Amino acid sequence: MKKLKFKNGDQLDAIGLGTWKSEKGEVTQAVKTALNNGYKHIDCAAVYDNEAEVGEAFEEVFGEGEIKREDIWITSKLWNNAHKKEDVIPALKKTLKDLKLDYLDLYLIHWPVAFKPEVGFPEKAEDYLSLEEAPLIETWNEMLKAKEQGLVKHIGVSNFSIPKLKELMKDTDHAPEMNQVELHPYLQQNELLEFCSKNGINVTAYSPLGSGDRPDQMKAENEPSLLEIPTITKIAKKHGATPGQILIKWSEQRGTAVIPKSTNEGRIKENLASAGYQLDEEDMKAIADLDKHFRFVTGKFFETEGNSYDNIYDD
Image 1: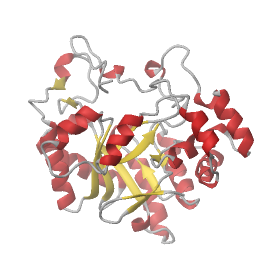
Image 2: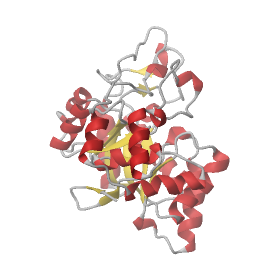
Image 3: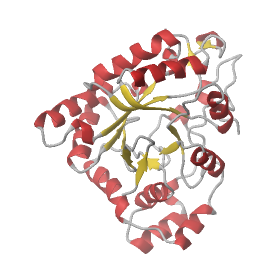
Image 4: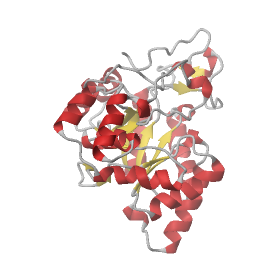
């Protein structure tokens, strides 16, 4: 399996387990299954509302002694209602308590959007904080403090476009070490990948299989299925793989990390086994031709009356 490298020499296994949408009653076992079957990369977030259950898995597995905490890469994310500088580290400490950890390997600003501290999810324009009220650079500087305090080893962002990365980077000498974004054959984001590569920013692909199990209100009518793309199914048949494995391998082979979510034991093992395949030049060219700039996670869920986030991605 490919590994992503960081400036201090740390390395991240490209294929990890995502936990977005994993139910509380299932996620503990899913994480235990993943860790006990060779995963070394688990992706979490406060807003997934299941970190306490993920923490139960960490406590149990690490407590058994065979798998050491220091050998597992654990990521979490700062939710939008904790962007004010006085709220960043308390939010991180809450995540650490829930996950039953002393530190995170990676902590990300989940979105370049800020809510008022008491708002879980916005219903009206007044629920937001402006960039003047919660400047991203102030949030970022608190992330840096968390790193200095040893609470996190690496810091980064999620859902940041090139303009937003540039805006943040012009005010700091410490560029994000990771940008986690939606990536799959229908949304290949080549310009963003090139920008991140040139600036030493690693990239993680989320929704690599299309997030078909996300809430209905986040879905468009008649949206496509990545698992049924004829090019993907043809390549899968050629390699004796599943379409899902080809989609995961494509992300890994491009040099990004990739975090497919599953709570099914067989699928969890199958996803990790994607690393064992190798796509040839013909495969990669065929997949490159699939790009439609189609997003499954559009950002429209941030829209409220009088406050449009229709183009949060600046594209």
